[in-house]
Structure formats: C-alpha cells, structure tokens
Image (cartoon, rainbow, N blue to C red; front, side, top):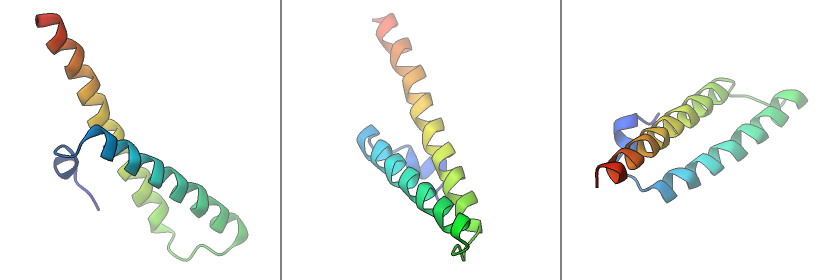
Length: 72
C-alpha cells in the first residue's frame, strides 16, 4: 500500500508510468475474475485505490502549475 505522501516526491513521469502499470494490472485482474482464476480479490481494490492516489497527486500538480505561471 502506497501513501500519497510517498508519491509526492516522485516525478510526474514515474507516476504516469506507475499509473500505466496499475491500469494493465487491473485489466488482467478483471480477466482473472471473469474466468474464475482470481485468488486475491482484495488486490483489485488495492490497485484501484493506488490509481486514485496517483491521480490525486497528479491533479494537485496540475492545479498548482497554472497558479505559479500566472503569478510570474
């Protein structure tokens, strides 16, 4: 489990890469669930929440960037 405070020091490229990886993992977990092969059902929830945390941090950065450029 990753906390948002652990994600903030990472670069935007690292976060988007992690977002892509988690998206692929969710895709694979859905297939496993549909075929009855999913053993760790809690992993889907964990992955969804990690995606939400990453998107939250990326959104914070997007909102802060325009505010800084307008002031200058």
